[in-house]
Image 1 (spheres, one colour):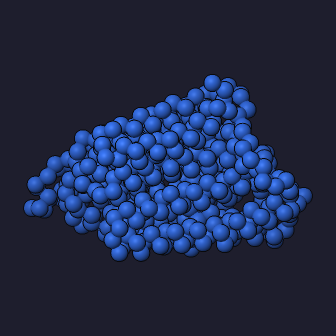
Image 2 (cartoon, rainbow, N blue to C red; image 1 turned 135 degrees about the horizontal axis):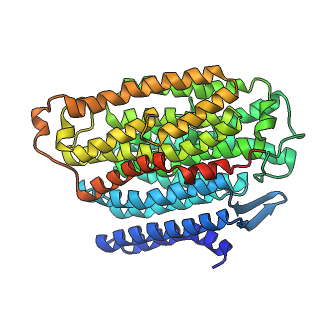
Image 3 (cartoon, helix red, strand yellow; image 1 turned 180 degrees about the vertical axis):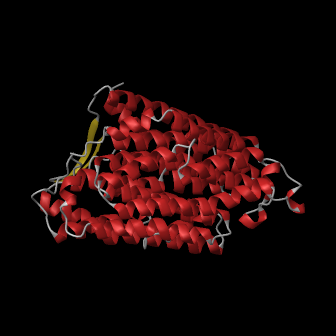
Length: 485
C-alpha cells in the first residue's frame, strides 16, 4: 500500500469505526469489539507511517485547493508523527478503560459515547498531519464540536452549563483570535503552509510580530493559557474517559502541539526572537504555570485538582516553545508525550476510585491505597511524572525545558520551573500520603479495586510512564528531528 493511502486510511479508519459503532449500538459486545479492533488497526497504520517517515519518505497529500495558497493538505513531519503515535496508542488503552468504566458505572448513552470518541481521534490525527494552518484550523474546530456532546454526556443542568463554557471559550477564542491570525498570515505571505524556519521572515517585523504571536497563543484556546482556560475545569463534569481524552489523548495535546508548530513552522524561532517585547507573551505562560498550580492546591475535588495541574503542565510546553531555543523545542515536544502518559494515568486512577468507591474528594481518600493498591501505586507514578522526578518520563522532558531556559538565558524561566515543581509536590504528595499513611475511614472498607479493564489500563499507562524514562528514544528522536531552522 502506498504511503499516501496509508495516510488517508489513518484519517478515515476512525470515521468508519464511528459509523459501525452507531450501527451496532444495540449489541454492546459487538459495539465494543469494533472500538477495540479499530483502535488497534489505527495504531498499526500510524506505526507503519512512522516507519516509512523514519526511512526518509516524503508523505504528503493535497485534497482540495480552495483559493491560491489555501488548500486542505496533509504532510508528515516529526512533531506531527510524535503526536499521532501518542494519540493512536493511547486510544487503544483508553478504549479498554472506557469499556470498563462505562459498564462499571452503568452510564447512559454509551453508543453515543463510543461513536464520538473515534471522531475526536480522527480530528486529532488530521491536526497532527496538517500541512498548513487552514487544515489545522478546520479539524481543530471539528475536534471542539465532536467533543462537546462528550463533555455534556450526563445531560444534567451542570453538564449543560459546563458544556456552554467549553464551547463558548473554545469557539470564541478560535473564531475571534486564531482565525484572524491565520487570515493575517495568508494576506501577507500568500500561503499558510508549514515550512521549516517559518514563512514570516521579510514579511512581518517589529511590534506587529509580537501582536501576531499573542493572537496565536491566546487563539489556540486548547492550550489553556490564562485567561483562555476556563473551559478545561468546566469540562471535568464529563465522565472520566472523556477527561482522559481531553487531558491526554487529543484535545489539550492538539492545543500545545499547534502552538509549537506555529512557533517553529510559521514564525521560525530565529525570526520570532527578534520581535520586540516577545518576552511578555512568554510571561503569560510563566503566570499560567504558577497560578494554576496555586489554584490546584486549593481544590479538594480530585478531578478539579488534576484539571488545574493540566493547565500548568500545558504552559510548560508553551513556555518551552517561546523560549525559542532548539533544546527547549525538544523539551516541548517530549513534554507532549510525557504529560500524555502521566496525566492519563492520574485521570484513570481518579475514575477507578470513583467506580469502586464513588468518592470524588481528596479528603475522602484516607487509607484508600490499602483497598486499591494498584490504582494508588499507578497514581503515585503519574504524580512523580508531573512533579518531574525519576523514574518517570516527566523528569526527562522537564530537564530539556530547564536546559532550554539556561540556553536562552532566561533565569526567570528557571525560577518558574523550580517553583512550579515545588507546588506540584505540594498538591500531589499529600494525596499519596493520605492514601497510604493515614488510617482509612470506616466507609472506605467496603470495596476493593475497580473492574479489571480499568485496573489493567491504568497499570499499563503507569508502566509505560516508567518505560519511557528508561527508553525515551522514540519521542527523543522525533523531537530532535524537528527542523527549527
